[in-house]
Length: 166
View 1 (cartoon, rainbow, N blue to C red):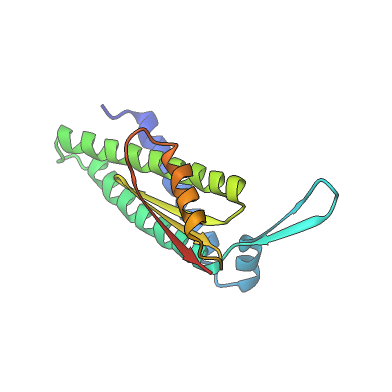
View 2 (view 1 turned 30 degrees about the vertical axis):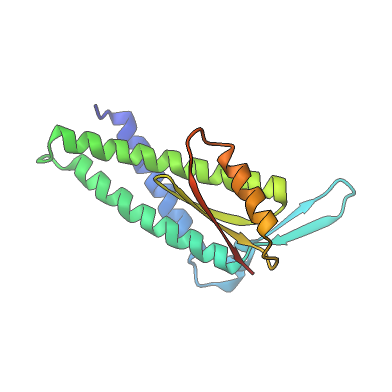
């Protein structure tokens, strides 16, 4: 059953998503550069800068736009007074699945960053996972290790594809 808390959560999540997409797609190149460059201080006190591939940024923006469109469609169904209870429940479940997948994608990207020190973009759709890695090195062993690391997170067999962009 749909409750007010759930609708507020979806509404606020959509607003955050729209603002995030707006920030990424701003035409000012200085702001875009700031978005794709992160600097941290390591244990020795040195400043380390990491640049994210523009291919990964464009994939993220495209994915966010698609997710936003799908969420808007599902929210329309949720708020439609003529929609049946089953349609509303299906839309609500789809929204929950989208949120769970988004969280899982981010956690897998973080795992690849920590384990292999590589920037990546992950897209989960049903039982298929597509991993795009920003690396000039196209290594079969690395791809197999990434596939194993991702499969460890799932109990069922997932179809995992690793692509290298560099």
